[in-house]
Image (cartoon, rainbow, N blue to C red; front, top):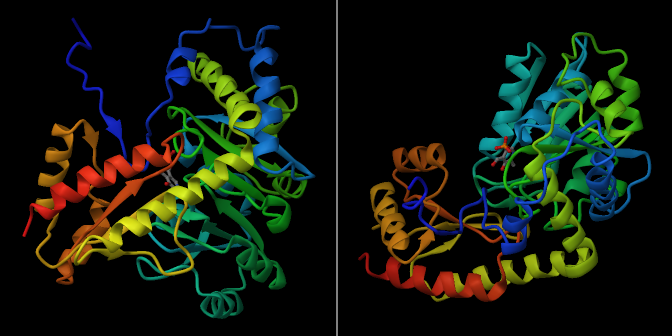
Length: 379
Ligand SMILES: Cc1ncc(COP(=O)(O)O)c(C=O)c1O
């Protein structure tokens, strides 16, 4: 029968992620009409709980977009950068680069400030770029999933505002795993998605959209339809989505957010992610030749990127992946483009361990023990 050979792997990649049993079961809840009275039973609590996880920032509305994180990022560019304006895309890795690509492909006047892989945004360099380019809007990544770097969102937003520009934040791989700091940062938009730290399947992008953004969008031409934050927010205000939502995911989202807010608690979830970061950091001390890739002080609570010793290669990490599959795990052999570039520079590759969503500290410790054994078999 179809599905009989689908492997039940424990996912330790950086999204999609392992799903709690209750989330999987919630996928069996009844389908519903998205313009029917059944709809607010799901989306009412969803909106409220999203705001709770975001720290209830005043002047923001949560909006559910069909698609995934990229759809929200694209929507922010389409809706918030006018033809007469300039956007500066600050990048510390592959997903920062993606924001720039989205801006360019949508015909925006876009410039980029790039930092080396593994480094966080350097405020002095940002200051200089803001002075040079005088952008109207600046995008950057809260948690760079390709390198395991978490940027100091508050300091970055403060600096952007000091130059009279307006920040937009990509928080795809951290929302639900650490404080969003929206009230402190006051970005135009804070963008995320379901399949990372919230512990759900992919299928929705989520944007926390400010009143300031909705006002700004009024003066931007050609915002599109599904990428228009004004149209999206109008539906969100009545607890609906602009286009037909994935009902299975809506049921799962409703159940999972209730669990996060009322069972695990938001603070408890954030603390668990910090605890898992500490476990990952401690583990690498026992791994001769391995190290942490991200800059000290900017290491992610939702995933860790590891440097490998000289004897490791992209090909060997692929072998590790298959050996880990044999142990029932899905291993992440690093972000492809970054490892290719590192190898071209004569450096050994990185690999990543996702510890986001509903992975528990004990599960992570078990995984790392098995992984340690596998890695040590390579000399
Ligand atoms: C930081 C970051 N931004 C954007 C994306 C793209 O999001 P999606 O794959 O949900 O479209 C990802 C996906 O991994 C990500 O980690």
